[in-house]
Amino acid sequence: MKNTALTEKHISLGAKMVPFAGYNMPVQYEGINAEHATVRNAVGVFDVSHMGEFILKGENALDLIQRVTSNDASKLYDGKIQYSCLPNETGGIVDDLLVYRIDEKTYMLVVNASNIEKDWNWIQKFNDKGVEMHNISDQTSLLAVQGPKAADALQSLTDIDLASMEYYSFKKGKFAGVDNVLVSATGYTGAGGFEIYFENQYADQIWDAIFKAGAEFGIKPIGLGARDTLRLEMGFCLYGNDIDDTTSPIEAGLGWVTKFTKEFTNSAALLAQKEAGISRKLVGFEMIDRGIPRHDYVVVDADGNQIGKVTSGTQSPSLQKAIGIAYVAKEFAKEGTEIFIDIRNNKVKAQVVKFPFLKK
Image (cartoon, rainbow, N blue to C red; front, top):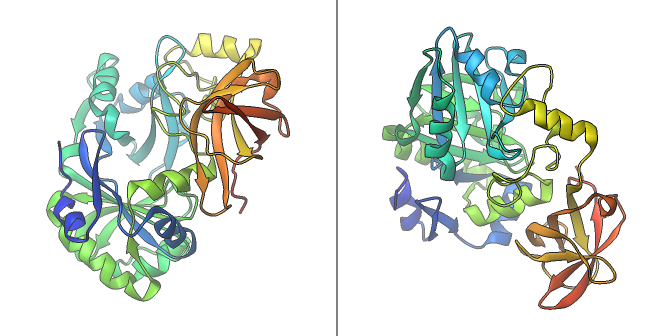
């Protein structure tokens, strides 16, 4: 089991620790609902240092990224970030990721913790033009400071003007007395905020500074449990649940990051799928009857015929109702369609709704 540079900090704060993607991670501190509310209403800090970071450098770095990712990275400029995915050769997804353009010949890719080795090997397989690749995951800590008060809580720690940063942009600068910290206006909560990348050796210093600066704004540490309920309310996909090696980006509603203006892994087959139309689609649904949908629960029609499967589900703390994400046959994918979730052999009524569940 791997630890992050802050594992001891979480234990000392009384976090409930669980194994996650090979790491010992905090799932909750005071409780998921309270932590969820902290992020939606004020500001919370997640240790997401388990995520993977690769640096790609050289004349052909962009060319390699263009060939392995579905989005068009040629649109990036220095300081800009793009959400994308790594398609496989059989119609599924190796991983979803963020692409950071540091300069014309230097990029950082941020990948999911459980896929670090898989993604590295996958990208390396296509690296036939001598792109310099560095896996800096084990040396890099990452804190997500999320919530409407994040900019106010962090501003005293840096001369980067946080409030004026565009969504999906980043800057490097001095942060909490540490040089060369990468501050990114990104996050997985839909509550606004920043993700902060730095070397492990500064983890305690930066964590302590953030909590001191954020005290007047009600800052609290947040576990992975609330990270899941927060992302679900926004309808954000989680790799391993909602997308995986068998799900196509077109089925998953990721057509917006699948750009057919260039060739990439399996692009011809994905374009054919887009043109022919898909047989199933990832949709959001709200429970009408009582019951909480869970991963892998079967979705049925009024007659009890299987029409799909739940990929994620929870009781939404903000909406006070049960919500979920599922792949369903396309004829059941329209907003307002009545579907049923099989919960312990009971057909429990639900309705297809538009993402995000939580409207701004």
